[in-house]
Length: 163
Image (tube, rainbow, N blue to C red; front, top):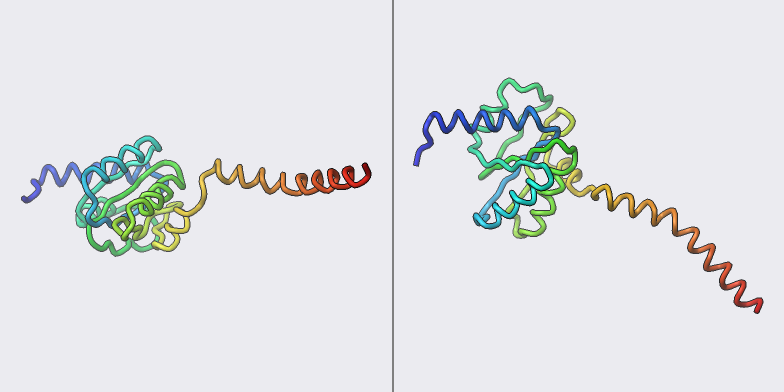
């Protein structure tokens, strides 16, 4: 069924609005994702402040016309969606974690926009694999704590031998 001109204009306007308010945008190719899986993803994304928009490639390209992003607009294969958010890492991280859950390459990062420039899929995948801030804090504290634990262990062994 064809989309009316008004509906197309509404979709382009929605994508343009998301583009203007987002710091990071991830272009996602999806295949054979059920409605329940898509709705579950949307709920998770919404809770994290990320918007997930499915639109035709021509409408997405039209929304990006005249944008101020540097670089070249990527080639978008298959069915495409956008994950947009104000957080610099959240869209890519959420797509990466969802892709792992869905398996069989049903959800694939195909590029994106990061720091005002179009970036290739490899860079967006790398951004998506950056651990969450809480995880980084935990790793940092663990690194600081490790030498102290070793020192305490040595002192304990010395004290045990002297008794």
